[in-house]
Image 1 (spheres, chains in turn green, red):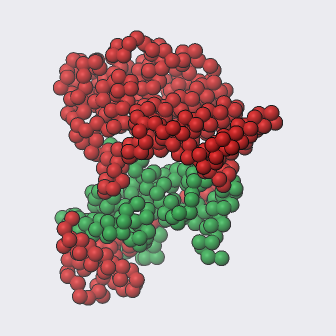
Image 2: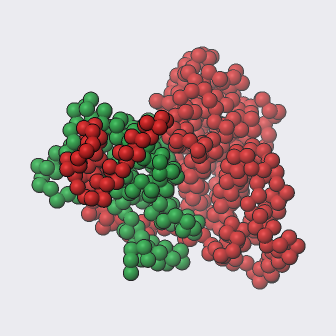
Length: 183
Length: 408
């Protein structure tokens, strides 16, 4: 059974009220949603809290999922709205980089350097517009292609490509100014 | 956006796509400008370093925790007529009607379908204020609401109706129908009022849980209300919309509508919405709820400012109303009560502008929206917004709903 078929089956079971099936669906998408939220809010604790909120909202709205778009697109729209709401309701919050765990096979030294680069890059990415941040994170942290990113953000692919280019150019300028070098 | 810029973006996007497809590195990629190579390297760095996953502990515990928090699903949906069937379906599944009531509803539904045809009833469900079928839609909702007895089912049902009111308001904002945008918002808050009344008359043990459901829903409604003014065709997102309205003197249409409906200065509403260094901003749904409550309670109740201050501090609506004695029993005080003609709204010193540290009578205030406030709102606040007049402040429990604003 393909991942898509399995996902479809889990959604159908969850719609019948099967909480375990929804738990499987959660595990299936947890890493992806968590990663997106983490790099948008820069705090492990907030990312964990918001990830849970996303899935609770998805559970309550599952009956409205019409399969017009892939489930992950629908799911990420919830994730994005949750992040937007988080920022809107805590807009005076200080930026805090708190990444306590990264999965990596690298050696400890490399890991430390990578974490430093990550923290500095995260700080710079937060200087981009919200939409540009979404594009950069969805494209390069989550690995979604331009078409998938366009669906999640409800834009056309051309817009995503332009946003991606603009965002990277701006980010590059920030990196030069703050002496952050590419790994 | 120039063609040249578009071309450059397209070329770069093609290079990124090729790099992804080939699995090669930016260093290996030839035939491109050094600037483009640098950008490709940046994408590579992000891919390489942005690889976080949840901690093992979180993974191990979160699934169980999530499942324990899943609420019962809304009623089963019939395949036909999505929203209309929701109304009927919820009644059948949740309210467990008596055979007599069941037969009565079936008869009504049958008559509606026979007389108007299923298509008409379906069309009614998507009608907006000002359209002929809107009345039918509301009547069907009323029938269902009146026949639903379980407080939680009533709350869930009315929150679904409130969602529909916001969709209708969005339709009107986008030019559908001939109805008034303000009427749609008024219908929305009427529906929320029914939720509050239900919570108010339910047992104390239930009211806390029901209040949390309402708190969560209002947070979602906050975002929807904000979006009523966001043009989908633009690149502007919700954060940008907030920045636009909070960075200048432009008044959000929903704030304008509330100002007219409740006879409150739009600048005051925008200051509640935008917040300040001393007080976080609050969603339009929260503000609407506070204004409605103030309007309903008249001079017997607290001001919207006081309720919003407590909400901004993280207290849930349930806790706030409980302290006001509005929960757990029928409340005569909660019946509509107009405190005199419009324009004579009380000015008890609680109406100071958030972020306004000015002296009494100082109308200079903060820039932007504060400048638009009228003399009708008399500020007597000396301190930071929301931190004054906290005479009724009680120890805050964990009843903060999902707002989490003050904790950030």
